[in-house]
Picture (cartoon, rainbow, N blue to C red):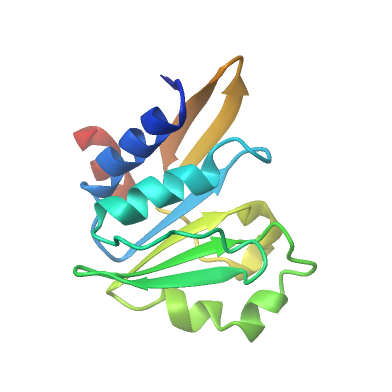
Length: 148
């Protein structure tokens, strides 16, 4: 488990992860409100070359980014009422293509409608800092962790 002190540390940690990632890849981001999931996503997406503002998809459920090496979809399922709503936004079509990476906040709300994650990253409050833990759910995920 790593400790991240401040927003800059979270952004830097996410950038380290991003430089090791190639599509196709699915990452679940878990943690309480305000634990740094969207900050992690911002650091990850910016490291992959996106220079615009990375906004939270809290109300839209998904934001897409056309990057040099991939298409990235950033999901925030916090406001999802029913996992079947994911079918309406075409999650299966978005996540099964070979050039796609997905960051999925609040994956527990997606239930069985979500594809299996390669990596699960959990951010938790730890006093004035954030504790971050991660686990691999696939060979590809384990290769990324081994390189960290």
